[in-house]
Amino acid sequence: MSALVIETTGLRKEFRTRRGRHIVAVHDLDLAVPAGGVHGFLGPNGSGKTTTIRMLLGLARASKGEMRLFGEPVPRHLPQVMGRIGAVVEQPKFVPTFTGRKNLTLLARSIGVPATTVDDAIERVGLTGRDKERFKGYSLGMKQRLAIAATLLKSPDLLILDEPTNGLDPAGIRDIRDMIRGLGDSGVTVLLSSHILAEVQQVCHSVSIIGNGRLLASGNVDDLVGAGAASTTRVRVADQPTAATHLERAGFTVATNGDGALHVEGAAQPEQITRVLAEQGMYVSELTPVRRDLESVFLQLTKDNTIAATVGAE
Image: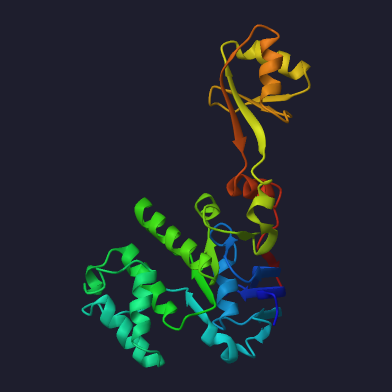
């Protein structure tokens, strides 16, 4: 069995517009998702995330390239592995006047799984106590929970979620995030597609970042953000111009970004900055390490990425 749950090689998807132009939605994508935990599939809206997921699930045809799920080539062997996969890609259809529990019970019956799986799914998504309410009265967050519960009825080894927090308020986002983290910790491999980089950093073990349909970076979250190392230090001091001069003479790089503080690069330890300033009789009122996050990594990766998705008419 392959150690990778999802693997794509040279995956490409092109669309032809009515005017004869070719739009490359996914550009020779090499994607590798290891077993276990939560893997973030990150990128801005329109970067090719949903198109990639639809190809993996047989909902769209790839223009070229190879795809494997659990080591099996897809879409050719998709029927053999589909029972191990749960996915929320589009808003599922539930009967509005039925309760959440009744909707799940009917679905469980239709796919031939025991009724006891309904209880387990409801508990895992945190709908216990709300499952006997009608679906039409559910909040958007509760509807999203029920959709995920529906995918859990067959106890999938792989759960694919496409932008599961879209439209949710902060409390709903937190609840879905906690639920996803719990699923990943339970042994389910979760592919979490999102454009909210800061939010995803709190739940993902590993990530793949794409832009314009191209893979920009992939790996362990801590490795990508430098294992939490601070890249700059924010410094506040009464006489900033003089402080900047002394710090630059000491070999540091100093910049301002409009927040009323100096941003100093090149200090392995913050105390090096305080030592330089203290020797000049200057004392800091703030000394804060500014740590990189997925958002800053993404912005750095895409800063010089000017490859357009449109490759022109043919």
